[in-house]
Length: 494
Image 1 (cartoon, rainbow, N blue to C red):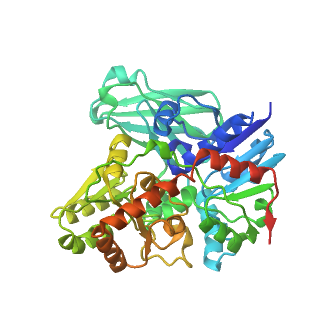
Image 2 (tube, helix red, strand yellow):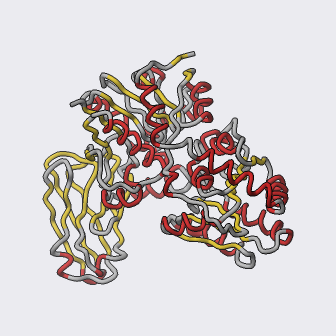
Image 3 (tube, one colour):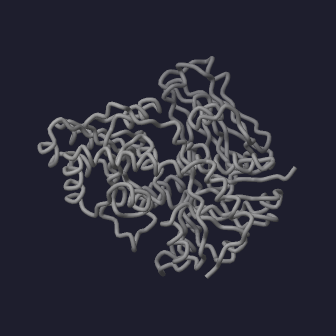
C-alpha cells in the first residue's frame, strides 16, 4: 500500500485550513493510500471528529519533533506522496511525488527591509534568546514549545488553590524521548516548579495535569534567565513582532517551490498571486464545504448575519465597522436585526476588541452570538436573509494581498443556508459572490445595496435560490475530481 503524508502545523486549531487538510486525507484514503497527518502539537481526535462530522478517521496522526519548516525535509522522503497543507510553511520536498497546496504565496522578491528582517533579524533574535514558541493549555495537558532544543527546562505553575493530590500527579513528558521530573513546591504562593531533564535535546515539553477543579485556571511560564526575560519584553514592544519570531515566514527560494511535482491554489485569488509572486500558472482545487450540514428555513427572518472570530490584525472580520454601518442603516429598515456569530480569543487585545464591538452594539438591534455552538450557527444562518462580509476593508490589496480573505468558506456556508452574499469586492469572497450576490467597495455601497435588497421581496427570493444552487459546486466529490486531475498531470509554468 502506498503511503501519503500530509503536513499541517496548525492541525490542533481545527480551523478552516484544517477542514481542507482533512478533505485531502479523505480523498487519498479513498484512492487506497495509507494516510498520515503530520503535525507537532497534540490534537484532540474526538473533538476533531465532532467538529468536522466524522464517524471515524481515515488517517492516523504522527507527531513530529518541534522543528522549523526547513528542518523537516528528511521526513518527506518516507512517503510515496507528500502534501504540504500548512499556511506560511515551506518544506523542501524529497518525496517521489509531492503536492504543495497553496493557501497564499509568500513573495520571493523582498524589499531590503523585509529581506533584512527575515534573513538577519529573526534568525539572530532566535539565536540570541530562548523563549516559548507557544503554550497550549488543554483539559489535562499543557504543551510548551521552545525556540531552541534543551535537555533541561524548569516550568513554574501557579495554582488558584494548591492540593497535594494534584502535585503528586504532575509529570513532564515528551513524545520523542524519556524525561525525568523533579518537583519543588512553594506553599506560600501556591506554586509548583517542575524541572525536567530529557535524554536528548528537545523543543517541546508536555505537562500532564490531573482532571481536577484545582487545576482550573493554572498559570504557567517557562523559567528563563534575566537576559531571556529582557529579550521577551523587547519582543512585546512592537505589535506583531513576537509572532514574527515565533512562526513568521522565512526567506526561501524558487528552488524550494520547484521541489514539488505539483502545485494547487485554493482560489482564483490565490492563483493570481502565485503567478505574480512565483511565475507559476497553478490549477485550482476549491476547498470543499459540508453544505449538507446547512439548511434554509422556510420562515426567514429580517436578519443580516456575519460570521467570523472577533480579533484584531491579520484577517480581521471588521465587526466594529459593520455595527457602525448598521447603526446608520437600521432606522431605514424597521424590524431588521444584525447578527454577529464568532468565537473570542482569550488574549487581552482580542477580548478588548470584542468588548468594544459589544459596547457599540448595545443600543442597536444587534445580537452577538459569542462562541456559538454549531447548532446555533446553522440555526441563525438558516433564518437569515442577507450575509455581510467585510474582511479587507481599508486594506490596499496590491500592497498587502495576504491580509485579504484567500477563499471564503463562511460565504459558502451562508449561501448553503439561503443567505444572499453581500461581500466586499476583494479577495476570495468576491469571486464566490460576484455572480450570485452583490459586491461592494465602500460602507456606503454596502448600506445602499442592503437597503434596496431588503425592500425587494422578489429579489430576495430570486437571489436566495441562486445562492443555494451555487453553493452545491463546493462538494467533496468535486474537490476530489479537481485534486486527482492535478496529481495526474503537471503544472503549467510561465
